[in-house]
Image 1: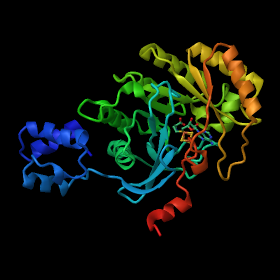
Image 2 (image 1 turned 90 degrees about the vertical axis):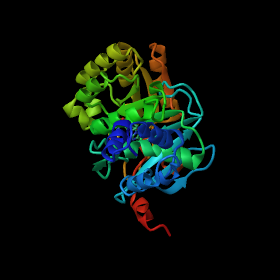
Image 3 (image 1 turned 135 degrees about the horizontal axis):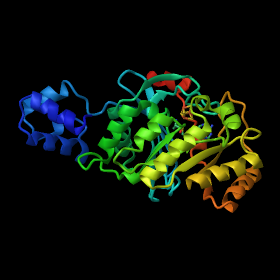
Image 4 (image 1 turned 135 degrees about the vertical axis):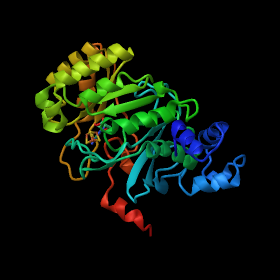
Amino acid sequence: MLNRSQIEEVLEGLGQPKYRGTQVLEWIYGKRAGSWDEMSNLPKDLRDALSSQYSLRPLKHVLTKGADDTTRKYLLELGDGRYVETVLIPASPGLWGERSDRYTLCVSSQVGCAYGCRFCASGLDGFTRNLTAAEIVSQIILVEELSGEKVNNLVFMGMGEPLANYRNLVEALEMITADWGLNIGARRITVSTSGLVPQIKKLAELRQQIRLAISLHGPDDVTRDQIMPINRKYPVEELMGALKVWSEKKKQKITLEYILIEGVNAGVEQARLLTERARGLNAKVNLIPYNKVEGLEWVRPSDGACQSFRRVLTQGGVPATLRLEKGHDIDAACGQLRLKKEGEKKQEPS
Ligand code: SAH
Ligand code: SF4
């Protein structure tokens, strides 16, 4: 899986004329060729040379959980035998500000995560490695192939911290949005981050109008410090500063994600402060009742408490959704992506 300049470089190195680049791009991204051999308008010796060096499918499907019309979680194997998960969510209209369409794909950006948020399954086993741009893009291609569905919206809310894999993220975004690539509109793509301040400011300079979601989960340092170690590095005020930069540059609404955890961040005072923060940024808020993670002791507040929390926001003039969880039953809800030991055993599927 290569991007345009890499393809052009490779072909030039093989002494090929320029128009070959266009042909190859059309095969890879337009016709979604799974092998070089399918590229019938390329000379056979060129196809052989390319297939001996570059794989068009760097990910292998291992298993799918969930069925048609429900959330489907795909376990995919990387070239080095590690795994990532990708979640296809049907009819998830406009949650992150995208247009409402039938399918949203939640992609992973890393194997594991180094940030160790205390409520999150993905961080429990630490960080293993970054995904390459090709591995990020291939999640989309492979899931479209496996499901037969077109991915309309994309969220970087799977495993990993996308902004900690900045270079590959930006390269993947190019392959995803380019007209020679997957041609998915930037406004349909949401990058979620736990709050890496320098990278947020850098990403604000990006040409593409991608959307930004922030895993806030606490409106002040005392609350946030308890559950997100990254807050010690980039405290709330600093994060707010970076978000101001973002909204001034991008002129679009930011989404604040806020997990509700009983006795930690779900009190009325915290709701009021969150309302102020969101108003200051002209942001909207997605409230997510905490999803149980095996091995973690946090508790989700009652539905009534979640609704009261939301009411404080909406009465304060902040658009707030209380997220109807999907994928709960197959551990595929956001924050439940984790390569469990049982997942690792899938190396030798029985
Ligand atoms: N690292 C990035 C993107 C991946 S996390 C980030 O943190 O934003 C995707 C979303 O799932 C985040 O908002 C995260 O905070 C949320 N999440 C993590 N654990 C969760 C849990 N146990 N219940 C509900 N949401 C969770
Ligand atoms: Fe990493 Fe995001 Fe999970 Fe925090 S919430 S541990 S940053 S994946």
